[in-house]
Image (tube, rainbow, N blue to C red; front, side, top):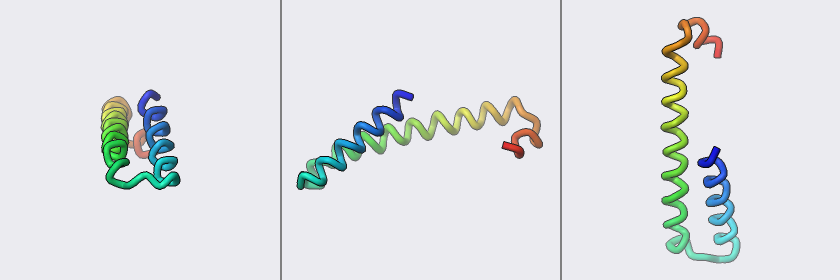
Length: 64
């Protein structure tokens, strides 16, 4: 949940900065941080899927 909040905040800051005319180069650091946060969230989701697959029978997993 923390990643979701952080991601939303960063995205909002980037969009607002862009609308105010802040140069892309200036926003690059925030974009890199946002990408890292999203990558971490994706890794968590993949681990969750992997763990779920281990406890469910194949037909149960397919149902999901």
